[in-house]
Amino acid sequence: MDVDTRLLRCFAAVAEEGSLTRAAQRLYVSQPALTKQVRQLESALGVVLFTRSRGGMALTEPGRTLAARVPGLLAGWESALRETRSAASRADRTLRVGFLASAANEATQSIVAEFARRRPHWRAEMRQASWSNPSAGLADSDVDVALVRLPFPGQEALRVVELFSEPRSVALPETHPLAGRETIDFRELWDEPFVAAPPETGPWRAYWLAADERDGHPVRVGAVTEHPDDWLTAIANGYGVALAPESAARFYTRPGVVHRPVTGIGPSRVGVAWAPADDTDPVVRDFVECCRAVCVGA
Image (cartoon, rainbow, N blue to C red; front, side, top):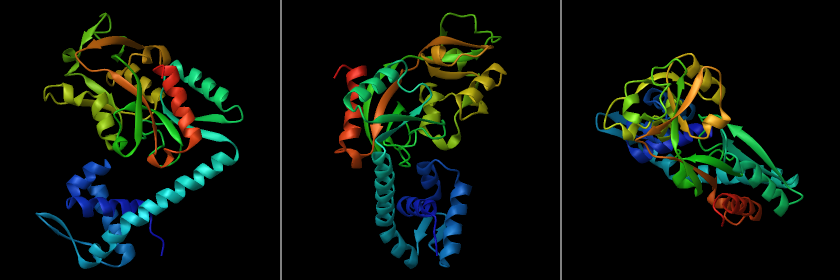
């Protein structure tokens, strides 16, 4: 019998948290979706894994047996997956580099050039990820290293080096009443609808909505997008405004959209991230050092 590792991850989260609500928050999924996954696993195994009550989710005896084995199973699978994909990229001397949006801005080309200088027979293959994947593929072992925006879900399980920061700005429809201003205070945007990342991105979505910088003022979401083009289209069509790195004014322009500086919120931070298992990988280390050399002068 085959069981999807996704079901095992859902089971492990509920077993560890003892609560569907907390496990759903941890996995950045809805509670109904998580309940469906747990029931699917129980159906596939033909056993009851939890007893449900108002107090939470308690493991049954079969559930405790499975819970003892699942962490090792998942760790083994993740290790095998990472090693297999890394072996494939090493065979053709390719380093898979994930990135979001503008990556490291204008420094990106310099980083890639420096990597080519250090590793003349290697190629940095740049793979752009959608905003529904804030680790840029690193969490799924789809890439070897990633240029990311901090914070992002799951970063505590990865190695992260911050490279630089830049102010956040706001993108608005050119017809917006505030579009003619040179600078906008964030408080003036609290009642505006915002174009947001998907809910499952959790802290990533909250950060780009500046949810912690609203003094408890609720967020209005006017549209949800995963890609820069869709994001710009939603703003141009008047579905909402959106916070963005200051560099978005250079990399993401669209007729009908203007970018303005915003005061009253913290900056956006750019980092390079990799898996702890690759701490001793010389090619990954070289790329990280290229990032540090170009961006922070290390």
